[in-house]
Amino acid sequence: MSRTSVLDAPATTALRMDEVVLTYPDGDGRITAVDHVSCVIDRGRSLAVTGPSGSGKSSLLAVAATLTRPDSGHVWLSTRAGEVDLAEVGASRAAELRRAEIGIVFQQSNLVESLTAREQLEAMAWLGGRPSRARRTEVRERADELLERVGLGGMAGRSVGALSGGQRQRVAVARALVNRPSLLLADEPTSALDTESGATVIDLLLRTAREFDVALMLVTHDEAVARRCETRVRLVDGAVSAE
Ligand SMILES: Nc1ncnc2c1ncn2[C@@H]1O[C@H](COP(=O)(O)OP(=O)(O)OP(=O)(O)O)[C@@H](O)[C@H]1O
Ligand SMILES: [Mg+2]
Image: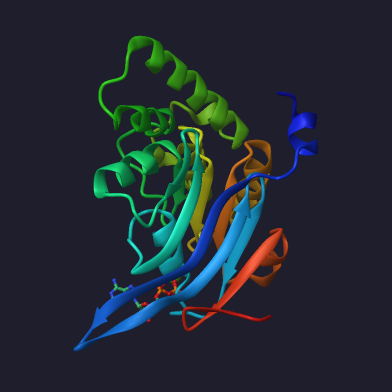
């Protein structure tokens, strides 16, 4: 399919969260971290999640990431094999979905110091078991293409210990895209970076969401960044608040 036909086609929903509630144990009771939140992200589009500290942004992202199961509500993810409710899947299916359909970028890039940039990406292909030779070749090509796309084409063979914070975070973005996810989640991905490399990483996330037709959920404290996303939810005390 050409880019033009993708852009002309009506947007397809990648993620639909419906009345999601998440609570944590708190002393004798429970604290509500996510309070009946609903939102939608289309493929190729971005949703900014903003709100004060403790408002539930990371908790919401953790639900979309299948890292936490909500108490109630639905989290519909459009996958290659059809719609899946992430609120209902078991642990092993969740792990499979994180591998195949969901890319995650955290505040810290969580890279393996001893591996090269290319190996960080290749390692993703090994998580589901030893890949075939053909698959290994394909993954290597994909890794190099992605590193090129994030501006690190010349650094594929460098160990990540030798990369700057901004470069490492760009490797993390490339790694999140290796398995062609339909959903990309980023939780304050630039908070540990200086302004300039932070801006590069944000540009990269917004651009890759469009170019790879991935839905992006971006948790940010930065108004200017939030304004660059097509849609936004602002959380206060776990609930969506009007602007
Ligand atoms: N594992 C946990 N156990 C208990 N309470 C938690 C846990 N994680 C988060 N919370 C509580 O849930 C609420 C939402 O936290 P969350 O981390 O989602 O907020 P946030 O908006 O991401 O904040 P920040 O901007 O500081 O990252 C807070 O009251 C927090 O204390
Ligand atoms: Mg947080």
